[in-house]
Amino acid sequence: MIDGELMTQLLAFRKERDWEQFHTPKNLSAALCVEAAELLEQFRWAKDTELMELVEREREAIEHEVADIAIFLSYFCHDLEMSLSDVVRRRLELNRAKYPVEKARGTATKYDRFE
Amino acid sequence: MIDGELMTQLLAFRKERDWEQFHTPKNLSAALCVEAAELLEQFRWAKDTELMELVEREREAIEHEVADIAIFLSYFCHDLEMSLSDVVRRRLELNRAKYPVEKARGTATKYDRFE
Amino acid sequence: MIDGELMTQLLAFRKERDWEQFHTPKNLSAALCVEAAELLEQFRWAKDTELMELVEREREAIEHEVADIAIFLSYFCHDLEMSLSDVVRRRLELNRAKYPVEKARGTATKYDRFE
Amino acid sequence: MIDGELMTQLLAFRKERDWEQFHTPKNLSAALCVEAAELLEQFRWAKDTELMELVEREREAIEHEVADIAIFLSYFCHDLEMSLSDVVRRRLELNRAKYPVEKARGTATKYDRFE
Image 1 (cartoon, chains in turn orange, yellow, purple, red):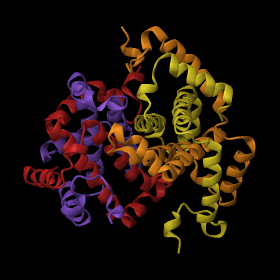
Image 2: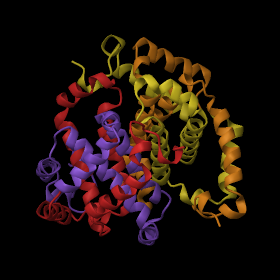
Image 3: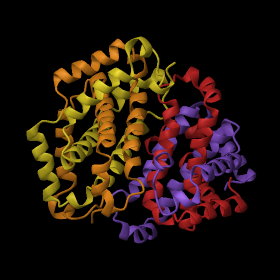
């Protein structure tokens, strides 16, 4: 998603403003909640049939919220020395085990409710 | 963050389980809120001085939540045909204009409160 | 919602466990986010047509999340010496002005988008 | 928190605007997330030592967010025929069992981690 050169720019942006002091893991988690909720705000009253029209009408605002989530997530991973692709890879491996195709196909049931 | 090959795996994982039907932009936004809140849950009662110890103790659980956020964000961008690096690049450009260094340095004040 | 006698019990519960130290306004806000997201988690993948059946099936879990939100909101108001009915009354007055019936009827448009 | 007369006003406000159609349990849960996150937004970058000053400076904005949470929670309970004081009472009973004083005193450890 975000390559090394863009990450370097994000870190420079933060450093120039002396904002590392605000970016504790707790505060970045709170910021992720705030930004995810701002994205959800776009959709909260929408009916399922209206979603695509809404996406086109509000595409720019939606992109801003998506970017904010990605930016805070990138800072979080950088600061905690996590490789996002590594954690996703491991998570996917785990999800394959928790949600075998034959049990999970076509259902949103959580794995701890499988019979 | 997530390269083409890993994205291909994420999409295959979803398709095999016939889960695209659940992944409307509204539902994915809701899922992003839920996962961001699960990350925040790790830190909600922690004092600022305890954060680093907490991160080490709960690193695996934290990585799982981070991965979940990244995965849902990746599906969201894929489905809406957004390039995450493009939207981040544009957002960063905008933030540079909204938060000039001389006004933003060392303060968490929002841009619409600058004097 | 929560009368004086129940509030007294909630405060005693907290005091006996020496938990006031964790209940800063920031942490209580974070807790409200976490609990609201746990409520949303019940519904995140559900289609509009499935909601009522889901509510009946998960009524107990839903009640627990609702209670958690109410409890943290009560502590927050208590600690900041806010009367919940007063703030709701004032908010309702404000919303009446922001959303006049003739403009707001049948639409989820936000007031700052009214023509 | 919210007495019968104020609830009647809230329901009339909603009915006059024909907004019941937007208030599915799913959408109200999403709205609760959005409002809780707006409350958290006030505090997300604040250090523990700054919280009380921040509360005084932003008291009006904080009250608005608190009111929004209470209003959506009230609609949710009304629509699902839940008595908020009953669910809180039952939850408190449960919490007393899950968090016995001798184990829970002075610690934010979750009950499933007690030794």
